[in-house]
Image (tube, rainbow, N blue to C red):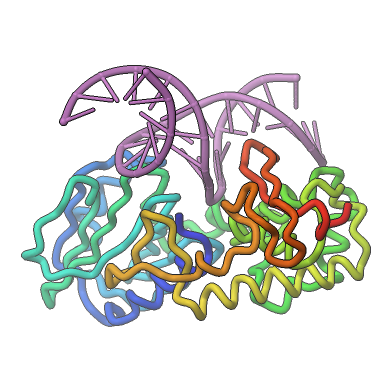
Length: 271
DNA sequence: CGAATCTCCTGGAGGC
DNA sequence: TGCCTCCAGGAGATTC
């Protein structure tokens, strides 16, 4: 399931498309999280891709008259293929470029999204209220401590809230809290500035390590070249219920927090 | 208003 | 081997 490192790796894998012009768009299955705008079939051809950026887990593809916003949901991947390569069952969208390369979105569970933001519509509602990027300087201990100061929800839910900080999904939330020795159920406003320092630092390093490792992969993530990442071997707690903690050997606990599996070590992580 | 819950979807795993 | 049930999860929408 794509977390921020996988999205960033996907974006980098697409950079070779910059400067190329769209030849055609094929939409095979228009109902992702929201309907894919059918007008893309007419709008995109003849437009040039100028840049590929990322905000949170959204990939932003800048064309002449607007931005194509792509989200991979939890099972999405983008592959770059020759246009003769036959589509498979869950290959919902193709954007063929004039050199014959195809940007192909596959998303079996269809939690992903493909939307169009016209240049005249700035301040898109999906983007304009998002918190800071976790790897940028705006995400620091002072910011986090202040952002949490009136929050009583569990810290794990807080760091997964995109209005506080973007890009921290379920896996890295558990991993970062373990590394920071903070119990996932701790009230967000109870974190000291010192704990915020540690947590910010561990969120950054966890994401950074995953990025360097080429993105983590569970069974259904592949990057643009079809190769899986390998970060999952390094998990301290995620998916390790009842297995010994890698630090203290006590069995890892699994609880539900905000409808999500949450993994932690009760000895290493303090409330 | 903040927090918790609901919702979309399908593949894979486990039980029999 | 096949069928059934259950589960996973990003994040906006809805409800409390």
